[in-house]
Amino acid sequence: MIEGNSNGCPVCGLLNPPSSSWCDCGYDFSTRTGGRRSPLRVRYRSIFWFACFVGCIALIAMTSAIYGLIGVAVVLVVTPHIPLAIAWITWLRSSFAFTPQRARAILLFCGLLVCSLSIIVFWSHVLDNVAATHGGGAENICDVLNTIAVITGIFGKGSARLPLLLAAVACWAMWLPVHFFVL
Picture 1 (tube, one colour):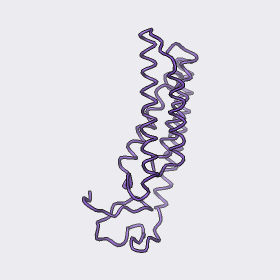
Picture 2: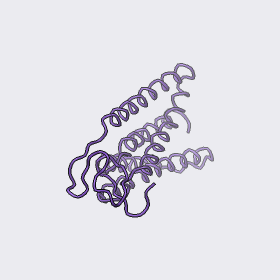
Picture 3: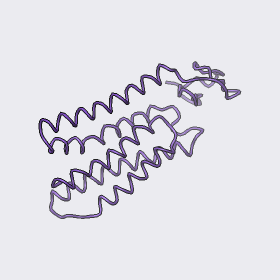
Picture 4: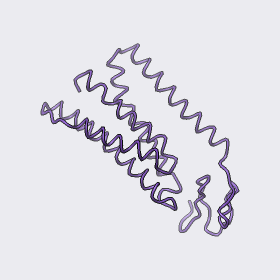
């Protein structure tokens, strides 16, 4: 890992030594031109997200076939945690977490925080119902938080945008079992 003032490439995200004038992808730091993302890296990322989507559909189908609606409810409740964890990991591994595109990067970071808070509110609602105190309003709070997370996922800057969007949409789906079952 490179310490100090490193050149984070805005094209491929690679960290380069402060003395370097070129990135491995071809980006020129002095003229701020050139460079390209590795087509292999982009292709694998697309395949990864498609596989995640197909895996979620297969998981829902299997659990509904084996366990019925209870299995689907469990999958819907657990699903948002996975893309949110991936979004946080992607954000933390990103080389431009708080660099030149500062406002959009901070916007994406706020989206990650808001989506995490939405899951916390959901589980506090579930625990509140288990304790039979029935608070109320938690779903409305989560709707607002998820809307903010979707907006920040769309307009934010960084590779954690897609996992954040998936997590925010999954957070809305997480409330479906609450309507159909006692949670």
